[in-house]
Image (cartoon, rainbow, N blue to C red; front, side):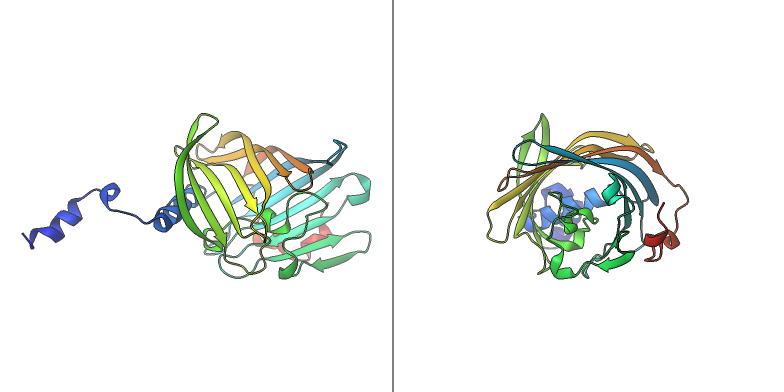
Length: 258
């Protein structure tokens, strides 16, 4: 009988092998990441709508470019086109799997490139409810994970996973993420501040599929529960494999943006 045990273990389906909540949470995150690999580069347009607690709105028009980097995080460039007072402002982000991200902000009024220090990653990005750490790619290695439960959200069965930032500079103690069990798309994320109090919620709507594989949300809505402020990102005009290279994402490219 003892000789049969190793063989039986090999023949058992993976689903019958017990996972810890930490192992299951990590496995879900790895699978979600795997399904969104291979797009190489993309561009998109977006409108940022900022609303204060009184309901007053301001709008900004932006463009984004992104490229995958083998064995590391993505590189992203965000360019502001409107209104006039922020036109030409650009943020360049180099995400990393383990090390702190590198980020630079170009301020056209000063004709100066400003490096965003790691200790300031929790700061608000251009007055929005998105922090600098929110607008860089969410690499699997940036967090530790714990599966909490299965739960339905807007009629879709989801995995609910808690994740804990590895970086000591993060503005969050933890995040709770709802990922749909069919396509592994993130539908909602709750953010908790350094005092472990509920801070923000980000919801994703209007997903569309590109290249028969890659899902992109067209609406991303961030609400700050502590201030009553919110930011809506409306994405459009996604394009893939546009021919971008790493040279389009060096620091000098910040001064050349048009």
